[in-house]
Amino acid sequence: RRVHEPILVGSVDHVVRGPHGEWGVLMNFDKAFEMLIGHEGSYVNHPRDPGGETKYGISKRQYPGENIKEMTLVRAKDIYQRDYWWKAGCDLVPECVKFDLFDTAVNAGPGAAIRMLQKALGVTQDGVIGPKTMQAISSTDPERLDKRFNGHRLDHLNNLDTWPDFGRGWA
Image (cartoon, rainbow, N blue to C red; front, side, top):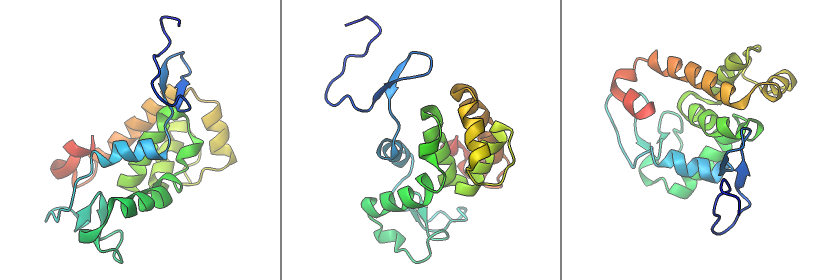
């Protein structure tokens, strides 16, 4: 074993070498959901939250047909994958951007998340990951893209009326 290689325990199919030679875990939906749900709480109905009733980060305002109070973690995971991970195109971006794009899609919506990504890339902000966005993604340094994306993301969050109440948990 070389000094800079990780000691692997269990399955190695999710361990990758990054663009600068560093080792890390491949980001996929299951890993991203695990990270996200650690920041989302159980049932709350905060009077200053415009989403109203919320459980696992799923709000009554966004999902009026769901029984939020009785929401299961499995149901929440299905919603997150269908409505946020896939719609935001998280599998289409570099590893270091996937979780941040997903988290932004959850907080601002997939279209807004994609527009922030496009702003970071310097392409037309139409909220669709098409050929021009994909070309820009493939020709941009992933770490630089992630930093630029997160700058736009924090700027967006900081300008929300609810930032004083919820900003600490978002950033």
